[in-house]
Length: 359
Ligand SMILES: [Zn+2]
Image 1: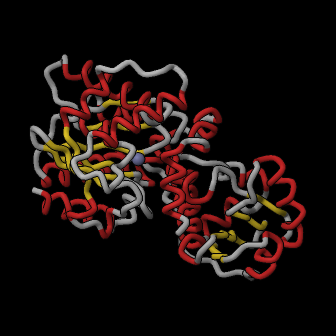
Image 2 (image 1 turned 180 degrees about the vertical axis):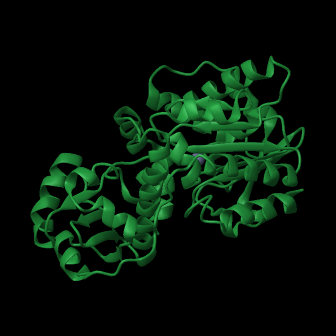
């Protein structure tokens, strides 16, 4: 069954419509054990070794325990209990392990598709999801990740199952989607159905065809004292960098992925020569130098500690752009709320994911 899990993980991992970089996770469970993607591994290339074997009885003890009210202490203790539930202590499981265990089905695939996030990161997303899927789905409003999110999903799944149905489709606002099935084929069929249903509601699709203007990466490199720069521009980006007001639609983070790969705010400048001064102001305001700098009418520059990190940041910014376009069909894009951004920015498990991403 692990080979089936690897197959479906690679299948979605290699399709950039579903996950980018290290995003998303998958699991298989039998009565006693849950096999979940290790944190910092990538679905596209994961093998059986990339999964962490979890003792489900130990994992379920989390629900019997009382944890401290204080967020930091609580998350620390929950993480320690999750680590304790591992059969193999050398690997670190995904932060979403408890969520996977809540589904009664054998396989769970959790992805962050831009198209679906057009729905989950939009003003009328929940209403539209109700219209499309009726009562066949669970919608979770933006929630503090970790223990609080897992508890919320647990409550909603238990409520849902009182109606005699098994929960197999959960949308997390400003995050992504969980799909569960007893076989890999069931998941593939269901995912296709969900994807097509959302797609049928999209009124305008992003135009990501490249637009090569006049990239000047060295200027940004010097202005921001960056190691590596990736320049990106396409027709859709051009729409958002025509003025600062348009850029406001893509300047923040829609999902935790954007925070992990390029921090939670992007910088806009009128002229490339403004970048150095603007970066100082930006850094005073947000506490970090921008990883994404958009220059009016010119393009977007992504900085990184390595070439790969810069490319991934650029790729994730393009994901933000796609989400913003898809969200137009559902009343317009809505970023993660500030309290959620603040929490994740200081959360140990995402900084772990980030430290892996920066390599
Ligand atoms: Zn996720």
